[in-house]
Length: 207
Image 1 (cartoon, rainbow, N blue to C red):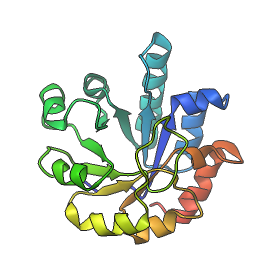
Image 2 (cartoon, rainbow, N blue to C red):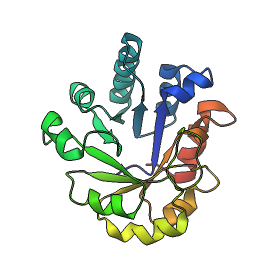
Image 3 (cartoon, rainbow, N blue to C red):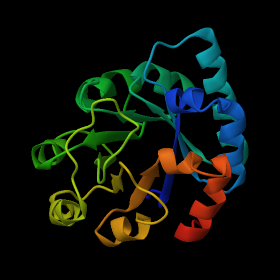
């Protein structure tokens, strides 16, 4: 698959901490021109969460954007979404038994061993990070850095999403180091709120 260079992540915990509404924020990001949007929810799914997921799905459909759900193979199948898995989730091989062969699966890695192991998994793309220090996780993995990203990039022939501490000031360096796409969480909401998505679209010249 070909990943959009701009990969925004709608982190429900971060939005709640900043007092920002999930659905309206998603609308702003998609209206700016984002071609993919991940709904990242790390706690239990309530009725309200379900309603938010449905609403964001409809927004993605209306704008032609790819919808991504993290961690939950069952929900990705129900919503017809891309599934993004972390190292503590089901393995991609196990998730495939739930989603079937058609679902696109992404897989987070944090070091050389995990990136090599991902080669044996039925995944369509991999993520690598954190590239820089990040505040979006309580216990982040060790920082990868640009030099290590450049060194590790040849170990996979899958599209690679870089994640972790990526901002408008360093994103182009990350792409130059070998990433196909940059995942953005905190900087998406920095300063002027979700309107930052327009700056990201201009910076990366997303088609």
